[in-house]
Length: 180
Image 1 (spheres, rainbow, N blue to C red):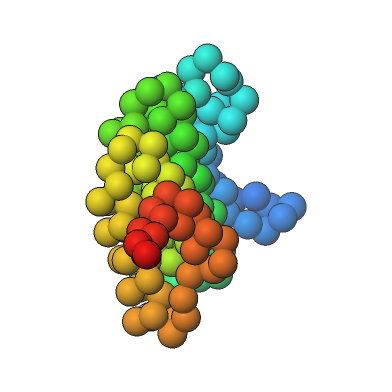
Image 2 (tube, one colour):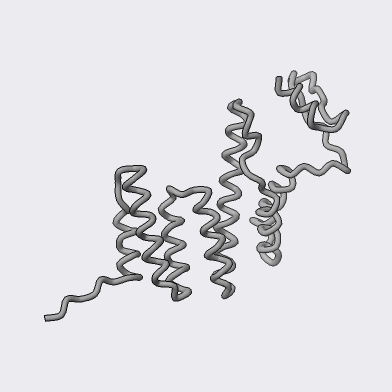
C-alpha cells in the first residue's frame, strides 16, 4: 500500500527494489529536490557550520511545512515524523538564542513563540521565552506568559510549574514588599 501511494506522488523511475534486502528504495537523481532531504541537510550543516548557521536554520525552518506524512499511520512514518518535528523545534530554539545573542530580541521572542505553538507543554520553552521577554524589558509579557503556563498546566495536566520555573519567575518579577 505504501509503495502504491509513493508511486502516485513520485516521478516515474524513482522507486526501486533492493533484491538482497527485499526492500523498496527511493532512487534519487541529481535533478530531484525533496523537502525532507533538504531540511535534514540544512539542519545537519547548521550544526557543523558556525559562520552561516543562522542562514541555514532560517532556510530549514522555511522548508518545514508541518507533520511529515500525517496521513500515514505506520510506525516508521510516526518515528520519522517525530524526528523531523523535534529537529524543527530545536532549530527554532537554536535560531532564537542566536537572534537574542546578536541583539535582535524581537525575532528571538517570535521564534520562541513558534516553538511553543509546536510544543506547548515544554516548560523549558516557557522559561526561555520569559527570560527573553525580561531581557527585552517586556515585564508585563513575562507575567502574561507565566500566567498562561500556570493555566495550561493546571487545566491540562492538573499540576503546577516546577520549583525552577517559580524561582525564575520570582527573580524576574519579585513580589512587592509589604510596607510596615
